[in-house]
Length: 483
Image 1 (cartoon, rainbow, N blue to C red):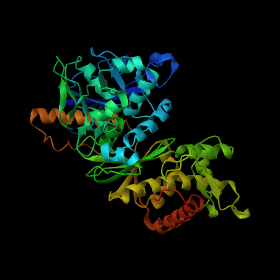
Image 2 (image 1 turned 30 degrees about the horizontal axis):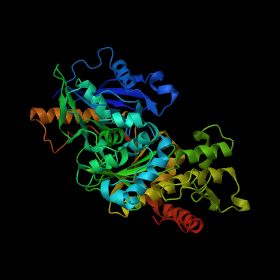
Image 3 (image 1 turned 180 degrees about the vertical axis):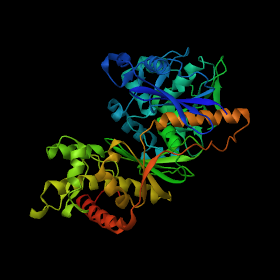
Image 4 (image 1 turned 30 degrees about the vertical axis):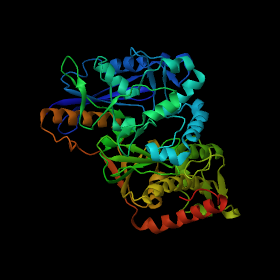
């Protein structure tokens, strides 16, 4: 069918992969960091979006895109770009978690009538990172910029618009739209009233394209697909489907799964996102994942996580009775924002470094298993789990994860899955435009090379470790929301 490209504009860099449109084989790749002066005043929460274009141009240099027929764009999520009536930015993009907006998130929750009201309205409860919350922050802190704001875009929307030469029609996709706080994943429609609640007036919003639709074609004939957010693109690049979940090990953790419908969760623990294929991606996050491991390594005087893993492997399942509740930064799942971590089960015979190291890994994974159970109890089927992040390669993680998570674990080979997902979307849009692919069925590409870990006979052992963890959790925090 041809050659396609996918680009991923993350917070720090741009990666581009050029792929065979039929098989998904990666033919060539490009990379460029974002310019250091892209942050306004050195503040990482305020970024001139032109920095993304400069990085894109550098990554695509040297004829990387020669012969490419279609491009898909993936980009960091929740990066709000407010534009005036002429399409010019009224201020730098508001990106990242942006803790400046935490108070505004709480105000918005109260203004609509609480967490349940937001969950019913758009499937998610406002947090500091969401565009709807950043609008409220602008009104309170930069009222002139808020008044001049006439159009709203996110990073991938803006990049697609720029690649197409800033046409009159601005577009997005359902995946990125679902994270704004003013688009409902249940009925697939915007809630303009929530934009007005946050901003104080209406603003133009991008048209939401379907998964196989094209945003447009450049004068040179290059097709640009709908694009999507990084999370959705990575899921598409991995090739996950019904029955699959993804557990991501960053400083904080997240669990998401493909589901056939949006899940409305009055407690706010589930964020109902849409994916890049027409399905849904319910997400549950934890505040403590790899930061638990790093803190434990520092406590034990170890230089890195590899050393912590080696030490943990000298212990046994259950860590000789030690249980670590890894709530070092408070916790979101369960909803315990102001608590600290807990180390329980201390006895003379358990007070050894290897047992504490093992308890750190087990506590982190049990916390993620709690998040996974939130989805399972809402009817989400989980037959296998993709484990992502550099920490997934640690032997202690791989030894503990299948038993504690209770199912087969897949550890994919490191790759630019968001960029690959964007390229796969480009191939889909190209094939649909040519009539060679069904717009309802994405192209079948080669699966990710992966290591498969089965729990085998360790399921009972894992269940016992989790029961020990759960008992300590419930005794320590009896008033917490039950998972």
